[in-house]
Amino acid sequence: MDIAGLSMALNQTQLKQQASILLTKKSMEMMGQQGEALKTLLQSTNVSAVQHAAEPHLGGNIDLKG
Image 1 (cartoon, helix red, strand yellow):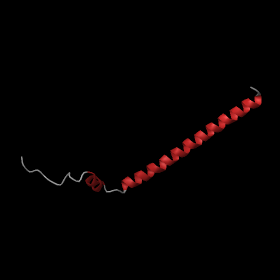
Image 2: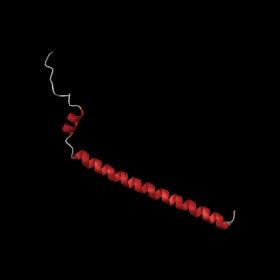
Image 3: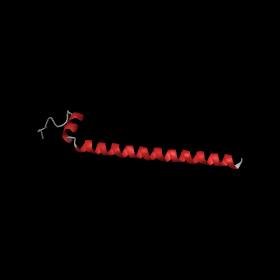
Image 4: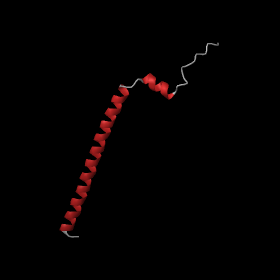
């Protein structure tokens, strides 16, 4: 292979690597934003209401027989 061909192959490899790194960074950024949104959502949620909605049959009766 000649020098020009090697140079083109090296440039293509570097371009692919840079694109991969940029895509990974963007994915990590989006995950961070989604994590922050989920954290905010969880902090603003009434936990007991969510638990009751998930299992409405629990906590409605008390068994007093011993």
